[in-house]
Image (cartoon, rainbow, N blue to C red):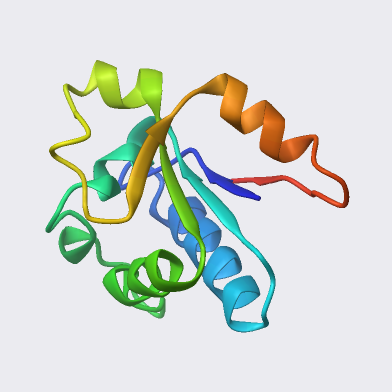
Length: 115
């Protein structure tokens, strides 16, 4: 599990989360990627395209890989604070809360990385 807590407010930390998660997916690891805090905005269409960081892989490409080969979840409370509803998010993004997060991190062999 990789949890992104930063968005455009901390671009390097945000990019690291997406890069590590997508690299793990490309390596065949079962990845659950959580968008929390300011990264929750990337659950919306067009938001990843607005992100730019020199010498970093394009966020839209990384998000596409995660959506196609992993699980992408936006935090319930984080989404609600930003008035983001299930109807607003990209296809493949689910909105879920702490109970689902805890269930995933407590799974056998699970490891959580938080950026």
